[in-house]
Image (cartoon, rainbow over all chains, first blue to last red; front, side, top):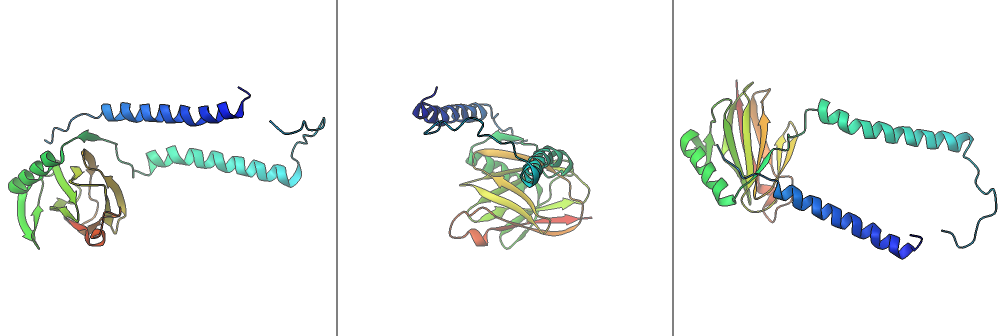
Length: 36
Length: 175
């Protein structure tokens, strides 16, 4: 973990993957409108 | 990680003015952090986040039906619609108009459904400065209770193309 390049890659990849996943989960959770 | 190892005992704790400024900055961070949840609950300016998935064509069809069942007039080609107090009202945003014109009663609550036919628009009620974002594919629902009567202009405050500056709508609130 003392490799700065590894830390840089992880610092970019971890938020990218987790925020993308979060977005997909949010979109998948939107219910269809009933338009009463 | 540094290029060379610093000499032993290099760290000196901040003192005097520096310490005071760091303390003030930290205190301000805490104040601003607490201000966000405080204003979320006390400001009463946040939406409930209620939204549903909808096809733009289906929303437009619902708006057309709303105009047909609750329409009370027309102004410059835009229908004026009076929803039942406590009921659902619909507002459609599209390049470059808001429709229909809503006629509401002061003190009555409405569930206002908003969606866009094409791209992202801003819903800004003036002069009360109530702001919201309208996205295509979503049925955004906010509960509104007009507290004063008058004519309120709706403007788009999210740049939406060449006719953005002409994109206006209207909400009429009667006693």
